[in-house]
Every structure is written in C-alpha cells, then in structure tokens.
Length: 589
Ligand code: M6R
Image 1 (cartoon, protein in one colour):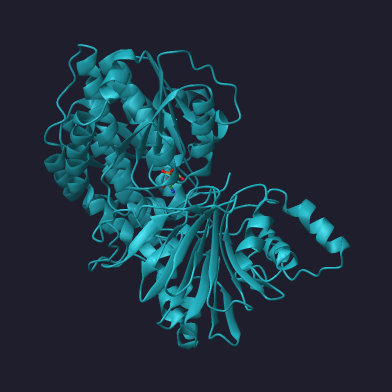
Image 2 (image 1 turned 135 degrees about the horizontal axis):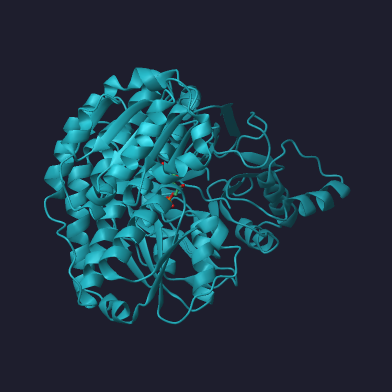
C-alpha cells in the first residue's frame, strides 16, 4: 500500500507534497515523511502517525521534493522505518514489497554497508547508490532489474539536484505536468488540477522528470511515446461538504451512485462486443476480496436465480494459489473498487493464463485491473475516501445486477425490474437513521451476530465486516440456518443479533433462528421489508425497508447495516474513515 508523491518545478515543494499526501492518506497512515531539496541541501522530516504530524514542515525551502505515507509491511511503525529513505547521495520513497530484499540485504551487509531501518525499501536505496556512476536513470534501471516483487519508486540523487526518476512494477504511479513543474503520485487525486497533463506508467516503465521535461523509458532504455489520460476533476473531489466523516457522506451518495452505475452499464454494454461473450457464457467465476467478495456473493444468488447459469465465487487470495478448473465457456468476473488489490490482480493473471475471458467491475479509472481485463464494467461510485466500502458496494451490486439482467436477455430469460432503486435507497437512508437507537446495545457488547438466508446471508456477511472493521467489535455474519450447528453456543444474555429478512419464502425460517437466539437471551434487531415481523415482542427494534424484488434486496438492506457500523464506530470514539491497521487500497499480497 503506501502513497507516494514527488514534485520538481518553480513552486515550493513542501506544501505540494503535504497537500498531496493528505489525498493519499487513504493508502496508509502509519507514518509520514517528506524530503525537500533547494539544490544545495536536502532536508528530511519524518513522523509516525498521520500527515497532520508533518504540518510543521510546510515551511521547508526547496522546489524539489518527495513524500510518503506508509502502511507498514517490513519493520515496525517508527521514525526509522518511515520514508523517505536515504543512502549516501540517494533518497527515495517506495510503495510495494521487495520479495528478495532479505537476500539482497545479506549481500550488502557482507560488503560492510550499514542500514538504518528494517525496511525492504532501504535496500533499494543501497542498490541505486552502488550502481550510481553519474546517471540516476541508469542506476535506477540497473537496480530495478535485481528486484523481485512490486514497486512504485520516486528517486532523487543530490548530484543531479533538478531531477526525479520514477519506476513502476505492479504498484500504481501517475506522472505528469502540473503545479508549475512536473509531478508524480500514486494516484490522480494527489496531483490532478485543471491544466495538468497526466500519464499512467505501466509495469516495467520508467520516467525521468525535470521542471520542463518528462521522458518515459522501457527497461531496455528505449524511449516511449505515451498518451495522456483523460480525467475528471470533479470525480477526484473529496470535499467533506459539511459532513463530519467521509463514510457518512458516502452513504448519502448511494442513491445517485445507483442511478449513475445503471446508466453506465447500459452505455458500456450497448457499445461493446461483450454481448457476444455472454452468448457463449456457460459458467461464471467471480474473484474478489473483502466487501467486493460480498458483492460477488450477492451477484451469484441473482445470476443463478435469474439466468440459471452456475456461478462460483472465490476469495482472490485463495483462488490465486489454487489450480482452478476453467472449462471453455467460462467467464471470469473480477470485482474491485480500487482496481489495485494485489490478490485480485494476481488471481486475474492466473485466470488469464488459463485462457479465461475477464470482465472487471471496477470503480477507479486507469487502475491496473482495467488494463488486464478484456472488458471493463465501470461502477460509478465516484471517489470513495473512507476505508470502509459503502457506496462502492451498492454500486457494484447495481452493476452486477444490470449484468444479470443483460445476461438474462441474451439467454432468453426474464429478470425482475431494476427500476426505482434510486428512490428506494433514498427512503432507506432516511428510515435507517433510527439505527442510532440500536447503538447503545452494541457499544459495550462483547460480540455481535448478523444472520440471514440466501441473499440476506450475503448482506449479513457485509454487515458484520463493516461493524468489525470500524468499531473493532468482534462480529460474525452467518447463515441463519447454521446458527444452531455451533454458533448458538456464543449467544449470551444481551448479545446483539441482527436478522435480515427480505424473501417471503424463507422469512419464517430466518425468524425461527431469531426465536432460538432470543430464547437464549439475545437482543434482536431486524432489517426487513415485512411489517408484521417488526411488531413482534422478540424484536427490540427494526428498520422496515421498501419492498423490492428480493433477489436485488441487498442494495437496500445493506444501508441500515452500514449506518449501524458508522454510528457504533463514532460512539466508541473511533475514526470511522481510518480504522486502525487498515488501508483503502491493498496493494500487497
Ligand atoms: O479495492 P477492492 O474493492 O479490491 O478492495 C477489496 C477489499 O480490500 C475492501 O473491500 C475491504 O474489505 C474494505 N475495507 C471493506 O470495507
């Protein structure tokens, strides 16, 4: 993970780096640092914690600099391990993991070199310093050829004080002109402005930046002609707009996101040959992690029920190390908000090697996954800043349900209507504010449980992940029917249990599990579209969501659970936008 940024130009570098790092903080917030050069001397400021810790460095003088916000992988969270790392005349920031760092370090130690951190990144600084013979670009190229693993690098050498060299391998990097000079960062948000011209680096590519020139190279040393990427400044806008937290703001954006994602799917689909692929599709494998995995589970229930096509859903980190059977007629759908999740990308690479056609459901434009996929179905969630996925989950569902509808049409089957969800989501958000009254039952609880059947079980898994991720309360999502096979033993008096009940045929069965939990003292909360269950004695409180085709109900039923997690997190004194130990974009395997 980690976020990196660099600048060389006419303006003072420090404020540009610090403002950029605030935008990249979602990628990690264990420690932060910048290095700024005025052409003669280099000053480095590093601190543990968030970007605000280096606010005092805004006044550093110098028009070249690099910065980093860290999500720790190699080495503890301390100032020594914070970036930038320096060895001799070389200073760099790194995002990624160098898999052969230990081996390389042993060799360097044997040569008598001294290390000041436990990081794999410092090893790269040593390699570059050793390879340096007056040309930074060549030294970086030579050193990168010795690295296994992933890296996005921005490197500076005090002997060439008006130059930055960048390299990319499996970690994102955007390079371009802007802010009166040249800029580089892990993503657009840190450097985009109205008149910027930005380019996305591909794996194995290098860039050399000076105030007036940017050159791109392959590892062979050949120059590359690159085309700028189109970006929409509004999309990158991450203003809180009066909200206290991004997560709460992003939940309120769900209705718009549903409408836009549905529109976008129709455009994508009309303009692509994907339709032909669907005609030949007989099996579907879905690959994803975390919340995106849960949207995959919801999609499976919808696609199987509507299209009668078998779907398997895989946790990407498991799939990538398996020996999957992908027979002909198999479509692989990879789902990822960021499009940078290392496990999902590795799993897609494996599926591609096995000859599968890849459709990617992705939110972030130009992300790595979009470049690997045969077809991209963009969700329209806009920028999601909070680490806990909310609107991106609902957007993924809308895109995947639109896909199910399109597949049904190709296969001559009828799908239920997807109309009216924008309005229903708006109503659901307003009804769900009442979950604030549930919070006192969760704040001090030892653990919490979410149960449901069918699509409601998928929602239960997502509700549980949301709660544990930002409130740090142990919680489990469970198939309601499985409760009695073991987990019921954990139910004690006042244990909160949330049941999701949206499908008429199986509602009573979920309610049986509710009775079993209630009999053991559980406090029961309900998310349902059936009014008759809300008034039951067993039910402490409920949210009555609008009726919709049950197969699509997770789009709505997830909303009260997202809000429950948010309000519980706030009540427990946490920062729901930046939960401990986590980061938004998980680019390590
Ligand atoms: O960017 P991706 O959708 O690939 O990310 C996958 C997971 O890391 C992500 O959904 C994670 O589980 C969220 N923090 C959950 O809220």
